[in-house]
Length: 317
Ligand code: GLU
Image (cartoon, rainbow, N blue to C red; front, side, top):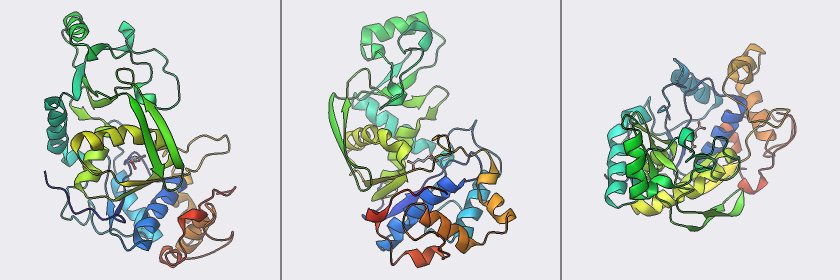
């Protein structure tokens, strides 16, 4: 498992092909590209298509088309190939399997037979940091309890959890600042492998960013609370963690995260209204404070002026 040479400004955009990118996704992609290119770094496009139930036919092609229409380019990706491919997660399963095995050998992962029905995971897990593991009792971390759960559910296929070490995990983020997350062994042991042989996001993203030599991860701030878990995985594998920047995501009028459901909120809608690339790029950049409202410009024109310290969400995208 060879890592590509990591460079601090080598960046990536890693969308899930669950539908057309909406304007919020496009703004995050533009920012990830600006961070990388303004620092002279290379840029990678990776498709995170492990959740097969959410993958929509044609979405990957649409994502490639829309990013290019916006003026975003990449050196490596599913359509152009490259030395650290494949660039589509469904083609990388053996790499994730190897990494799961490595954690099992190190005693840092274990099978878990618990379900909500037997009370080992709260029926309604509280929202907040570490949502994915919230409400888990840590039962299967104990070999005896695990063996008894397994006996009571002989047909249940286990998930695999990462065995968290209790302690504070500090995340230093170029946009969100310094955050401290407390992790507790057992209850915060998060899922790294789902039943059905599917690697979970937390494992796949770390394996990919590490093996692809990504030096900076720029993504929406809805993923900030995944970062301490990913840092724990970097440490477990002995990989160097990238620099992080979690940028504000676009929320709808009710303050909710936009979903990739309606193409009206994406470029098809903008193009149908007759918008040109430069108008969309200008509106995206203005919506985060990079340029004054009403600016019309190409993505590459933002490169010279790009200053991440200026990122402030503006009302009205
Ligand atoms: N695939 C994730 C998404 O589309 C992004 C993951 C990441 O950037 O770490 O929301």
